[in-house]
Image (cartoon, rainbow, N blue to C red):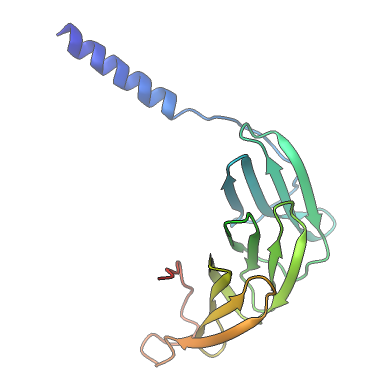
Length: 181
C-alpha cells in the first residue's frame, strides 16, 4: 500500500512539474492579430506578429529559451497585412504569407531580414518547404491552386488548379495542410 501511495504521489508531482509555465513575458506590441506565428528553434523562439502603432507592421521577436528578448525587427514597408501563415526551412529561413488577396509572401533570413518579397494575388492559406521548393496552397478567384515556388528566388515554377471541378466549388475555404511526398 505504501508503494502504491508513493507511486501515486510521484505521478501527481510529475504532472505538476510538466504542466507548469516555463516563462511568462510581455512584449512591446500594442495590438496583434489572432493568427500570430511561433517558430520553435534550437536556441529559442522566433515570433512573428502584426503590430499596430501608427499603422500595421510585421514585427519579429527572437527570444532565448527562457523568453528573454534577443532581438526585434519591425518591417513597416509591408502593405495589406492580415492573419499570418508560415513555415521554416532546414537552414532557419522563415517564409511568411498573409491571408489576403493582395498581400505578399516573404522570405526572411534567420536574423529576420527580408530576402525576397513576392505577390501571387491570392489568399495564401498554407505553406511548406521541401528540397528548396516552397509549396503554397492558395484560394484564387475563380478556383483554388497549388503553387510550386523556387525557395531561393521566390519565382513561381508552376501553378496547378485543385478542386476546380465544381464539386467543392470555388472560394469555398482554405487548406489546412500540405504533405509533400
